[in-house]
Length: 184
Image (cartoon, rainbow, N blue to C red; front, side, top):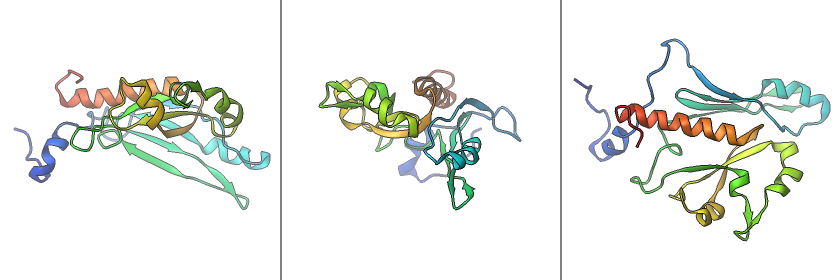
């Protein structure tokens, strides 16, 4: 028998729908994909100290990134961890808002029709790397909505398309784990 649900009745529907996949090993987390870091605008002597500490990973139950920076002759870490069973990876607002991840090449537009990815490549990519974006409110099949409401989600990527595909694949595995083997 399943253990009792610890969440209050009003939250059970939202929490029952998603569970993290079982870990491959009890003592370690499996890295599904590690993206090489690009960008990091630091002066040249500082860049050498900060870049080796920076990483972006899709793991079996979360995303994790570190954007190291250099200040006053010391490298500092800025680590971010986001679990795949919580928003923004799963639907929220009673299931009304379903996240839609895309690359900046698919979502950066000016006036809905002028692709601005070329400008990003010229002026921003050298410092910030490639980017994936998120359109949080059901823009999955609506190009106009995606172009209007996308927000930056993760920067510093070398290949945003591969990272997005690995991330979406792992999100589906999280959903598939709960629904008994069928991604919904």
